[in-house]
Amino acid sequence: MATIVLGVIGSDVHAIGNRILEYAFTEAGFKVINLGVLTTQKEFVQAAIETDAGAILVSSLYGHGEIDCRGLREMCIEAGIGDILLYVGGNLVVGKQKWEPVRDKFLAMGFDRVFPPGTMPDEAIALLKQDLGVS
Amino acid sequence: MALYLLADVGSTWTKLTAVDDTGSVVARASAPTTVSTDIMQGFNAALMEIRIQAGSNEDKIYACSSAAGGLAMIACGLVPDLTGQAARLAVLGAGAKVLRVYGYNLNRDDVKEIESIRPDILLLAGGTDGGNKRFLLENAQALAENVSPLPVVLAGNRNAVYEAAEMLEAAGFSVEITGNVMPDLNKLDIEPARESIRNLFLRHIVRAKGMETLSRQLAAPLIPTPAAVLAAGMLLARETGQLMMVDVGGATTDVYSYGGVEVPTGMMRKGLEPPWDMRTVEADIGMRYSLSSLVQQAGLESILALAPQEEPWQEELEKILASPGRLVSPGLEGLEANLARAAVRISVSRHAGTVERIYSPTGFVDVLTGKDLRGMQTMIGVGGVMVNSLDPRGILAIGNEGLLPENPRLMLDSKYIMAAAGLLAASQPRLAGRMLADSLATL
Image (cartoon, rainbow over all chains, first blue to last red; front, side, top):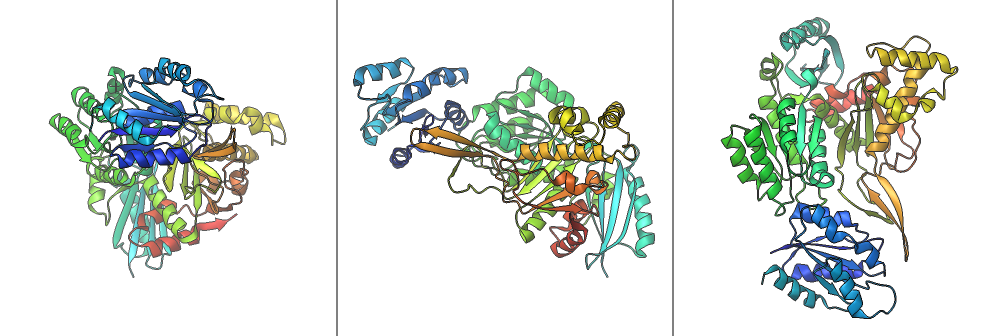
């Protein structure tokens, strides 16, 4: 089964959702490399290279996701893993903003899938299996 | 009564120590190391002296060596902060000298450099188990195609090492496959690699003439001298708790620590988990050959700050810089001690981890990387610079900023016994413990 790198980006210390995702993706058969909270872009990229991960799953719960995530795709390209799947989810922006513009902003940043608050892990698992071509 | 002969074949001196089965030193002798002709000449010269002093022949001989520059290695990993760092720590932990650490793919210049450096052993790592295979395989291929055969320890992704070994062996390399230095992300496992390095050291490192003759007479395999020191520290730490040792030399400063890996409550660890027994070597910090970079790092003002008068110290410093073989002039020993203290402070600070306070919207978090040395109970000064100093305590008293030891007991290996005791640490721990206890002096 595919290896995925999981973590909460930036100065964000929300640990509970991260543990739930680790559990759910492991149960679904993935080898989860969980970097935990306070993870920098560099750590995500380095971990993905060393473990030959198929996807990087980024969480952001504290509203600064836009600033933290900007440039992650470019960093992957620079590091030679430009084709890796990038997922992001959580409370990506401050306040109650319309979902579509938020989603489009992150898609434009180079993320392959963007998930709104309240997404259940099963939904992301199904899409990841589809994107990676695994059953 | 059994007599153990412990030999340390150094780059300039071959030092022999004989101990009886109570752990008492009954004889010590040294002779210049005869590396250009046959190391057995120097060894036998010292041995004769020992036999006269001891009045009888030895029963078992153990030896370590740092002759001909010691065990010189190159390490290759994938990501420099991950398997690159793991490979470096494994090499240092085996008692070797790290000539280079390469990350990612070896390019044409890198293989040319490896070919011209000709390390004794190359450690090839890369990828977690089940992780990246490409870089390890490509690097094995690059080595096989462009470098003349070398002993290689393969300590990378377990799913790629056999294929890599085949490529290297087909090109005539001798390969030892061992456990991955980083089987899981940020999880270090360097003991298997260390063991393989020691095995290869034994089989291939006979560069100095006579080393093989000596090896055949030994009761246990010949090991690199830093490996013996590391073993002595391990024995002490098991008996007395977390400790560290510092050896300031002419060219490098070695730091050893045992413990300091637990994450204190309220802190969070990031990055590689450091090894419990860790050795680091600062190649730019030393009292003679690396003096100019030591002064640069420490700052001239801080070196001269404690001088009774600045001028004589500054003049002396310039003289030493101009001729590294020089001994410090009488009356200016304070300069030497001050330089050594700077060397200890810089090297221990680099050995120690860091803690960074990160503020988040929900409060702050203290993020720890590397080792937390605050709980070290003992700090031991090892080597000639400490033993010959009038103020070893002053050299070791470096303050307790950051994660440095908070309130360690300062000690001195007053009889220069560390390497010799380390040679007996595995087979005769009781004797080795006795030797150490006899040499260690509280400062």
